Image (tube, rainbow, N blue to C red; front, side):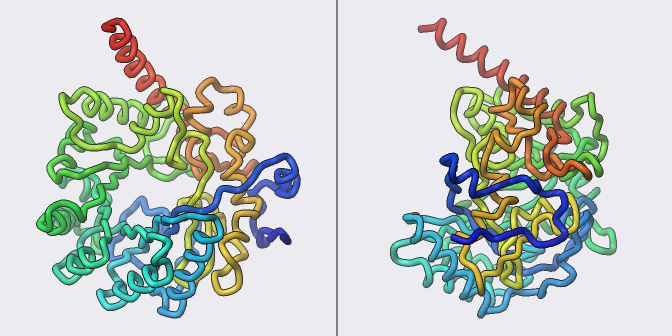
Length: 405
């Protein structure tokens, strides 16, 4: 197979990454199992920390507002093709944006019908959506029910904390609207709510934030560290003081110390699994290969879109679903770099005793101009603090259990 090359304008990706050499050494790419479809490229909110609209890559400006029906059909066929080529009987498809509900109910119906038609009967297409929640109404709820679309909602905690950042273009907070959207989801029995996504804000109290999220009875909560890197550090960041790590450790103690498990928190679950010797199932922690791919509204194939926080074109590839199968993306040097695990770590990370757990941190957070992604995460001190804290807590519990036997 002829290897695709990266487009011009990617000086920060590793130029010494020889995919053919990796293949000769026995490495094999991991097929994609999660497909993120940008079905709408604009948003009805103006969150001040948004990597799509407020950070380095402004490529959204040249994207069509909505993924055309012909493009949807082509993407659906490509997903099914990739799954069948690799013997997968299930794929995860996330409908994303911008704000995906801006497409309207009729267009969303076409998206769901096209994906199901292309994949069935031998490939199960599990549909999810990530939304800001303010447009959820009965028409959308009926569609979610009909096609089994589980919905993740972005909410940043209590009203005063959420409304600091997740606002309309006129600066008006959106917490009341988001709350109403989540409550509408829960009127259908709770099975439609996939979970809540919350960006960590150092100005918010961690326990208050967590306990507010619990009021929605979410099956899971995903706490996200604000996207930042060595050129553009996150708010309140320190290279030595683990402000974010301490914030997350406080949430961990409240979550872990509850008499019953109140919800799942992905980062904590993954770290516990790793410190006990397992493998991670998320790209943001550990050394497991990245197995997701993004399709933009014009049908172009991109990498994880949080890379847009690093530099203009960081997520871009030279591939398009009308001309290339997803397999071609697996052999791009920039994609391989996110699949080869420890071999992509900086020398500092490779020598660190936490490397197998931390995994160097989330790939976009490693970026520094001049050295690309061959660096520790900008959250290095925070990850060290959080992982060490969780490891110590879990190890003490394991020791007590062993002593009890």
